[in-house]
Image (cartoon, rainbow, N blue to C red; front, side, top):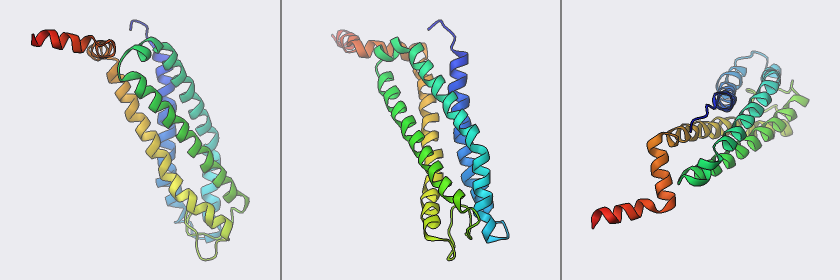
Length: 193
């Protein structure tokens, strides 16, 4: 692999880092801090206002990550097709990326439901109180799970990206190519005889 892929790799990694970091901060910092707002009618409002400000940045992060991911697949298509283990990792990572995008979109829809009645009383941005209207409370309960699903999925994507980086080391490429062509077994068999 003689070509540098700094730009597309940076797009891939920076987009994913922003997506992961923003979702983790939102779950821990923003949603958590909304419980400290003194007026229960402002707790959901504060959380939804913060998420609304983050949404365009998050959308850009997803787009940048996607452009970088597609670019990396295209730039490495020969190795992805030929190196054992690489294709499976790439397919699994693409599937998890789509799942994380779906969860992110669904989370945004649930947040939009909160935004319609953002001054409904609540314990926090994702925790209803006894006085929270039923529709808002249902969206909050879904968001309480979704807020952790996104950083979990994107965290797995970060680990898989690190694994793909390891697969690009010269020794790993050689082993993977030998394994996929069946030469590894033939060489081991010859060495035993």
